[in-house]
Image 1 (spheres, rainbow, N blue to C red):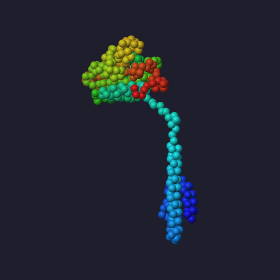
Image 2: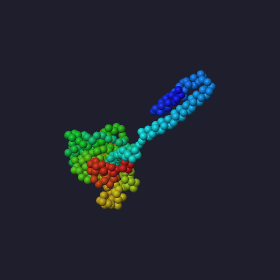
Image 3: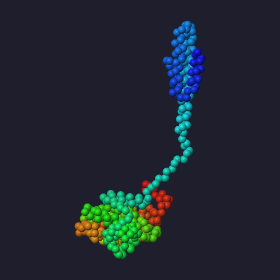
Image 4: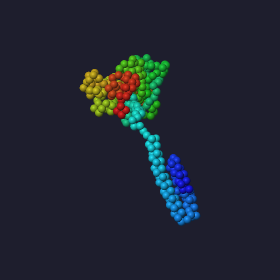
Length: 342
Ligand code: PHE
């Protein structure tokens, strides 16, 4: 009888696949209601001698089963561990996935930097579409129909009234009109502009400008100069100098062209500045009273200054890029050379 139980129990232990099954076997054979317990119950009917002998055998069998169960448990744990290690195995020699990190386009970087400089000075930033009305691009900027100044900015017309804006001055003209009853104004307008130029190293039919406009009481030329000096120093370094040269724009009077000391040679003279020590970066001036009046602003009370800089030109100087076309041809090798953090 005990032998049969032993055989059966050992067989079952061997067949166990996991700890749960093993625990069930343990409860069955070593618990209170198993076949061994039944044998113990029957001991009552036996003689003292027989009781001793059978009792001893039952105990031996119990400890045999106990130790076999524990050995089996160790085996099962070991198998489970091996399985887990197998499942979670990683191949350290496999090459990692490589993700390219993008970075901002150099023109957008310069645009953002310029915006930040002016935001810090309390300017608003205005951006609107590139398709503009003749009215805001020319008429309101004091460039009437048939005026020769229109030739300077050979224009892509869409129809008689609409065109691709030739300068961001158009944005200023709209802003001026919208805020005529809400002065003072301090705004910069960055964006793309278009002219029917033949593309070469320094010309592109599409380029970028950022234009600034301040209108309030008592704005003076010296305010314009101070503002542009600060901008130049923030863009090209603390020691920058600027100079004004007389110029002509329809919408400003007086008008100036503004040079910065050459960022490459520090003003000593080099190839880039053609030995002059200066590089032109923008046009500017005091807003023409007629422009203020056309927008509905009293020019006897208010005055203003305006400036317009080429973002591409500033980017070329900052990064030492010799051909403006690089900015638009999207050669990935060129674009990649701009570190995302510089
Ligand atoms: N709009 C001029 C240009 O495109 C630049 C400019 C802006 C000049 C504002 C004076 C004042 O060349």
